[in-house]
Figure (spheres, chains in turn orange, brown):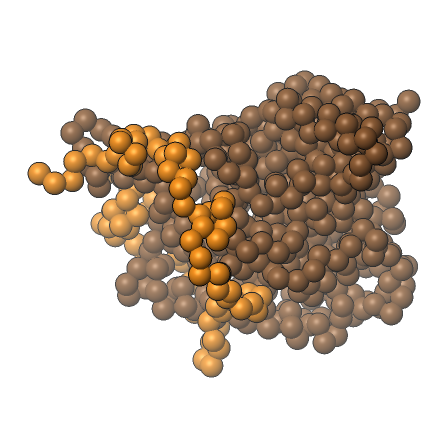
Length: 100
Length: 494
């Protein structure tokens, strides 16, 4: 399988990365090189093989069902959460107007 | 009098504990080396005051007769992938430039609690994506090593933990943190003539580490020798409820368990790692390693890891897939860069911010990841790669029926000049061909320096162990270290 400029433009749009024509042109052969190289995985007979889900067997834990069970990741940290926001407004994340 | 900056973790800790020098003197000596090494570009931010503050606390604790931690008085470099409270954390990207975390990563917290101090935040490949430290927004890290014979070609320190490798090798720090997703501790350690270990997946908490590929990312130490790595890994590791894949098991005392007598141990030599095109000097170093481990009492056995050749292409589906998902968080809303063109809406702002904030290699991997996860291609690429990952892990499981630890080269070549491989992303990816299989299987693996090649550049040997058997890896590494007697240092030019 290989990608053309139109496909790369579609992927870039899905990934929310703006790309001009020159960049798209440059990406096409680069991505195709990588994709044709990974094609070799198709040679391997994987019938009956389960795809890996966890590399080291582990059980998922449940945390205690309590508010602010861990003060580091609990609530009431609005200022810390907004500290790096590019455009905080009135205690919220600011974004450009989305409703006309 | 010994030069303090020539000392490693164990020697510094002992010198501070017995009063040979103060922790402050140690911090001052390393701060001075850091300040004088701007030419290496190993640090993105330096924090000399943090190093002094931690040192003063250790000196005060010692004066008060308090018990000292396992890293007491040791100043270290922190890879700029670990969130550090109040200190800029960028992952070497423009999109996180100016990001000041309001919290501390678990691994760095553990190190500070053990008495370590921070010299600064180390440069790396952007978002840890790269094998030469040429993808950082803050410029290339220059290796302290140069080819013999008066060459002044700037050499790659390897990547992604290139700043860590350069800093330790050039004696700017006695040790540094690294992270390894597909070789990012081991490959730069090999290039820079130092020692580095990636523990079993889950040993070190990922909480507060900028995510690249979460099912592969593991932190680990980079230092001068095996003992120093054992000490520092002990300080970094441990269960963390804030990381859902953290291992809830005790951390062994790896330092106390060090033993280079390998009698009764079997060392596997994987025949598939003897690849066409591998540098003959690398193969020679591998043969030396085999002889050294035999000399240490081990029995050497031939093993097969039949899916080795498929590990790297599988990795280059799985890692970009996870990265494309993890990096979706950089949207110009919550933290980091925002690029809002005149009159732009929300979607345009996302696309402009990400176009401006990510470097080429990061974009390439996000696009690959987005493609292999997209409708219609998911099974052919992603599911197939995850099946191959199962087979790669099974190869190791089968090998453990015949051996206790595996010996292989760390890299297919020694370091190369900056710019020599940047035109071809695929050629760059091949650097990690020997490192990636252990990553896919989540196994502990380390690189130990074993000598220099005919150009005077360091070479590393890799030891891969069973899950949770860091001790077996460290012990075999120690057996090599004792016999390789690697003492070559880069000649100072910076």
